[in-house]
Length: 247
Ligand SMILES: [Fe+2]
Image (spheres, rainbow, N blue to C red):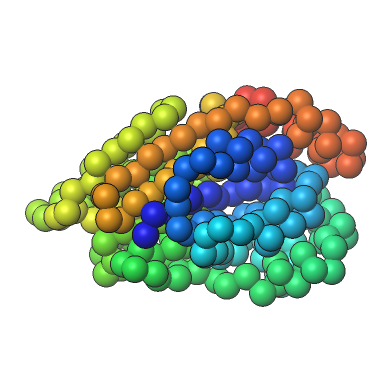
């Protein structure tokens, strides 16, 4: 499998457009989205139309916690005020086709070709995996060589070696990593639509199980345009402000 893996798009059509333009000439046979297509931003239909109609690669899509709430499958309890406002706004503004698409997204984990895909962690779509201790627990609860997850909006890789030792690295900027045949990996591509590692550029990976490589990318996009759409929709201003800071 050679996959374009994106996550946490959060209704940011400008960021998604920039990512897809960047990979236009790159080869991949799967396109994976690890959830949170919507929420926070004001362009849910543009993002969902693009992802629904994506052609040229097999789609592996799972839902995230914001998708669950925006689809009306859950209330927004546990969300902060701004996230709740955006989720409820999204619910009101989805086209019928996109509402159906969101509602029918599978809950992770999904497994394809020794790769497990999930939003938060394999057994909890709301769980945040930030550190090595937590990563070790996730490895012990799964049998797959590769686990790809999102939700934290932080590009990171954890490796488990043959002695049970876990090492983690936050990825800054573009990087190509070679993976070991004898290790297992937990990889987060970061967020397309709302990065939180103080770098506002959209984050994603191309992941190759045959060549054993993972390439991390950051691409700039028109942040001001996305901010204007959020303010224009009357969503809380903090959602726009955070985009320029990458927080
Ligand atoms: Fe998210």
